[in-house]
Image (cartoon, rainbow, N blue to C red):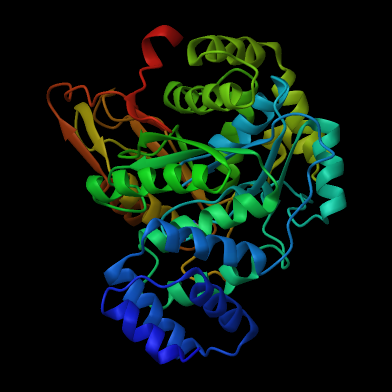
Length: 449
Ligand code: URA
């Protein structure tokens, strides 16, 4: 293979063969193809895209770059969930034990926060002692005992993705549909799940900003996932304002625990129950989404999902006393209440800006190697649509960084908008379901209430 010729063909819009793609991935992973050539190829893919057979070949080659976890000894249809990333998105922490309690095994390989979005691993690691790096045998053992386990990508799983993602990150080639699809699906196939539900975020706080591109991404993920033998469905959920009230690692873990104990905010519950109902149907534990959602609501009220979360935490080395008594968690150096500057209604809270703000408090990372401060973040006391009095507390901010409290408040207010009248109803939070047959409305809200 003459790699510059391959780059030129992709640059000129030609499709590459499966063999060529295979050699490219093995050549890059082994170090034979240097970063500068691969960067040019990634940019060519970014502009020219890939056909479905090319994406499938790329995904297969990436899976073959490492090991696959064998979950054939775990009974039942294994179903995982993946979110394209949002702000305040702690759904996985509630969803995995909830769906497991309903009888569906959930082998979850999660990611870290990057940019303005948070990551499940960082939230779990906020629990002192929690280990997200388990051996395959430990992963299977936790999965057997609690019917779910939550780990990070290991060195041996899809090494091609680790290398490619790092290069994409520094060459402005992350937002490319073929590259995103192959990155996500290769990891899910390698982790050993049978089925997958994707929470594709749409709106200002989402990873891709355009609605059209987001629809294309969701369609490609569902199409390619099914073509690769992974039963895949997706929900398009709105990410205009943060999900729930907490943003930041420990604040979000704490809110997830509260939700597992029956005191969760409505929007967080709505998204969790919608995704969970799709997982139950895929896992063969319910015929329809309405029936599945009713089962999940009943389970949440029983306390069983919380018990399972506590047990998984214990098995993965976490100190469960922090789940039982969240107030034990050490506070941050600064805790600042931010007052409303005017009376009326909160008309908008910009999730993207809040995500960047949380990063500035220490909750996020700009580079993969950065460490995060688990205590940093904020809790919103008002959400879009809430009436508010002048001076009432809009949010509480937690940080260990030094900053004038007034300035901290002022910066957060840049994410808020106010109006004298209630804002318009923004429409359903769960916009659509995508399955093998196409796009469908997904209105869980009315039957769930
Ligand atoms: N998440 C991934 O795992 N890969 C991408 O390329 C983008 C988001």
